[in-house]
Image 1 (cartoon, one colour):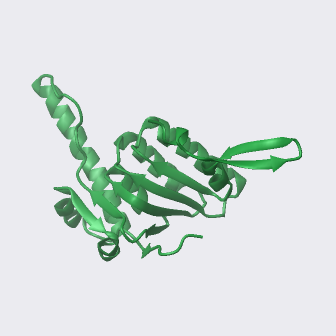
Image 2 (cartoon, rainbow, N blue to C red):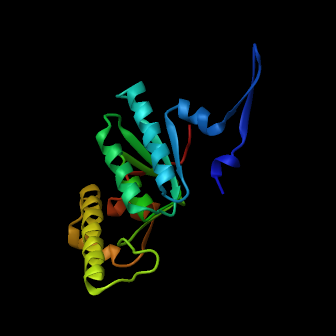
Length: 197
């Protein structure tokens, strides 16, 4: 189900009649965007367009990305990660609920990373989804690709947390969940949000 189909609208009276706008559009005007639900090609494409528009609008003003996601496509997530790092605007990430798997990578890459008090972050090694089959050489290639992706993800986590790659690999060998306080201690987050403006 598309989350934006369930989103309430704001009705404003204008000189030409009534105007309906979504809450997401109103927050976008305040340079706040939403990374909600599974990380898919479509969601990432939308978020990249929003980031690029806000960058063109004001290349120095902060952009806030609100995240509540179980993760998803690694390749798409890495494309969004690259854009977040390439734009000149500072990007603040706020974890509302859960930032798991690829969503955790996006969360921890913010210039300023904040969490609501009961939010959680989960990191783990990349997974293979779907049915795996083929000859020995195909399986070997899939395995090499997966190990390369593991190294990329591990390096990103290490870079943004100050941990060594070995420390990261130890944590990502299993699904590792962190509460807000634990995230701060481990270098995954910078602060806890107790008030929203």
